[in-house]
Length: 321
Image (cartoon, rainbow, N blue to C red; front, side, top):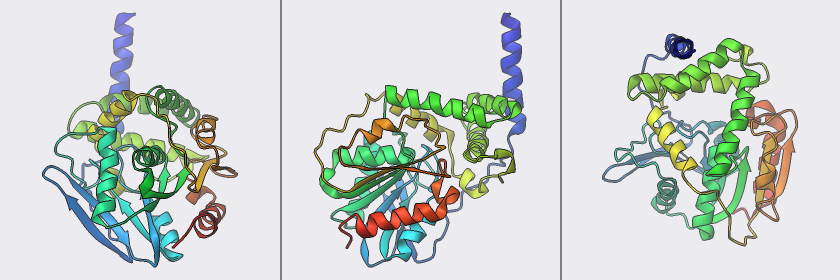
């Protein structure tokens, strides 16, 4: 039995290694129309960000992951088109945001956002967070409530500590349901090889995220590979160390009274099952939405309805300026 187990594990790992398509190319920081690329530099870290010009108050878009570069340009463009200054950024250890000190504490992620606010001379901004970015938005708001004008939590991760672990199990079951048997075996193997330091770990993480990206859609086999440059900005250390920080942090508790506008939105086929009730109940006055004909990527899966909700929130549901 012992040798059979070793054989199975070895086979899975080999399958994962042979399934890796990445050539370990360098990430090229994109250029976006109507935006200025900026960098915030400290002794050991660099945060790259894009600031979109506009007439109305700043909206900071925080992407999911953890451990992947920003992918929220379609939302940035929509909000910028209706007049908002919008900020995108690559989180520490993704893309070309350099994290030389190896610090992936959740408090450090929060302070990165605060540095952006100060660097851009923003008194207070609107926060939009998707997936893990929704959780990070809540962590920032809990720390600096006076700096946040509104919260839009899109398909948000649920919480830290035990809540993160429960959520991971739900996401794993979702991916198993969406995967063919072969791809499920690949995901298991890639998860193991992503723990190997260096190029093998990075390449494994990129191949793993490519499969996960496809699983977000109803028919993964009909979905094209994720953008290769985006995949090139993924690093295994960032994913693994941030996950450790999330698991080792106590379950998140929101302890502030707030009256700011808050919308919490999930797709009816979201990856979190019905765990979204935890966030629905976290804020006593939030507008809670289940978006039909959508999963975890609503700006792709039900674009028209999603952008209508976004526009209505920022134009009518907040004190826009």
